Length: 184
Image 1: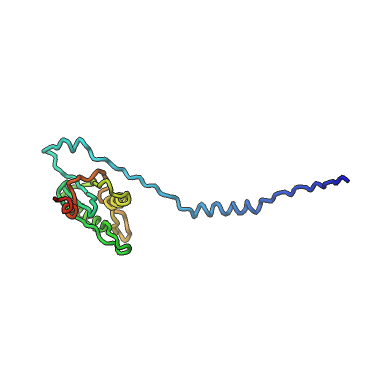
Image 2: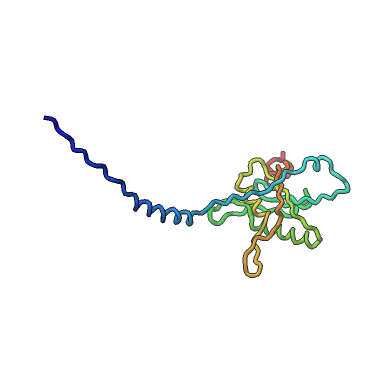
């Protein structure tokens, strides 16, 4: 009683319809895909040699932006406050946030005053405390680099201070609220 198994011929795999689908699907997906843009900022560290040997003939023309815990401080020349920008309450979340709109307006005014004095300044020194979060530093650098302006009925990025140097905020530049806490 031997059973014989009948060998069935293997069916050919028809992938024509799958290939047609891939031919259409791949280009459509590639066209609709958003490619990520990586922007690289050219940053400089403050020159230590220039800070250690101050020259009497050289003017102090450094524009500083100090990121403090409770405010932003714009100095020009270095150490001479131009404007203090306290944190404001965010309408959506109710949290205190830095006022980057007022910072942009302040830097535009500083740029305009410098141009009126025939000073073409493109550099700024952004000083932050060690506990400043990354998003704040990035948003600050974006704000000091450029602003949106309307030229010939179109919105363009106008240059403010594109040459950005980063450094640590000096310990003696505490906000008034912090000075009261540290006084004996």
